[in-house]
Image (cartoon, rainbow, N blue to C red; front, side, top):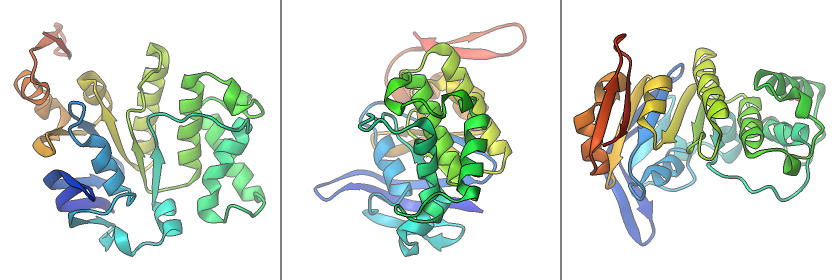
Length: 254
């Protein structure tokens, strides 16, 4: 089962942002999307989610054109965790997570016992069960990100797409989010995330997709694609590779 695009062109009514893009994400794997600001990462994510119509090419999910899927069907297949989410109403954290269950009902139906069971399991999985009755507006940014992950998990999708999930998180919560992405893949979901940190991609992703100027610079296994030469091409800046005696490596700006 895959989320797949072939020869995809992406953009908006007044302009093309990227073209010639081939993307494949299988269930059970993590794919990292890296690239400089303005390179088309978020536009690509929105096109893969069906929020933007491709300029050319098609997106398929499990062999079926995504355009043929209704909005409820897409919600049962794909979950989206945005980079930022500004809370407006003081819903409880539990209520926010329960909103993910609307993919299996509707906005106006009362949560079923099954819905509450799934939401409770998601809260527990992401370590925020103690926050269930706290107002979403009164928890930290890191806790909100975990709540959004729990909401996406409660949708029971096949694929989860995350736009810079570690942005603005402290060091500890960055590690927790990356561990959870690996756990989601281990549970059989396909996970696609964007990041500006190649070290996060090295740690959490099976494969990496390097996007620059709307074109694919390289794609393949993370430990192959994420090298000093390609990262310097990707960001147009010097990159230094630091390795220890065990063979583990990290990248820092040169």
